[in-house]
Image 1 (cartoon, one colour):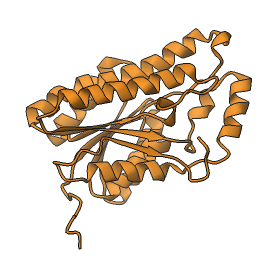
Image 2: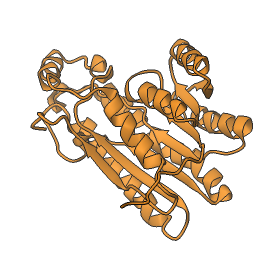
Image 3: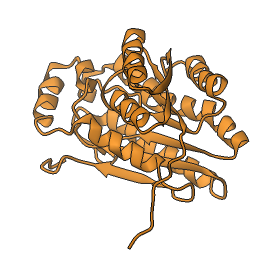
Image 4: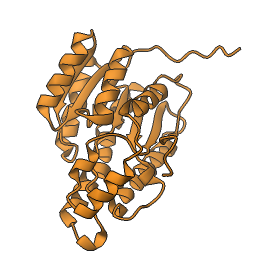
Length: 250
């Protein structure tokens, strides 16, 4: 018989992209599990509603309007967590955008926006959190990649490049922190019901994505994986999880 019990230590957990989809669902799940959540996203009103919902069930929460493409705003989010709760145990770098289009469409502004949010946003989260975690002697980064970080699809070249980058950055961070007590987890969701596809301006790419998303996971499937990774004992690092719909070929 196994004697394993997940850790019940209550943690201070920062989540970016927390106003909808995976981030919102993870915030609710983690608060329900007794953790304190510090929420960042661009939409202040969404954060206020989510915080009210968490507090109504006895949860502990703080939030700050945050654009992860702006380093000073990510710094401010981590500062809020540390000032209000004394430490930062986990950072979930979840914020992401996915304006798909064929490369020949030359949607350069959209390429740059994906790089700014999907890559730089993760790097800014690491830059803000790593010194804090090093000073504490422990911490945990959970970086949300994608199945698009494992394979490339038409119209998704730049998006996939950003998600490959998330995996490369995360694995580099894990290796550099060997011998310490900082854990790094990559979570790569398959198709999930979310607002990500709403940012697709290219009609052909939007139609293709609507077809692609006929079989999709609920966000709580990813939230459960985040909770699982966080609640492992301190000497266990869940390095990578890929989660797909059972019936999806992708």
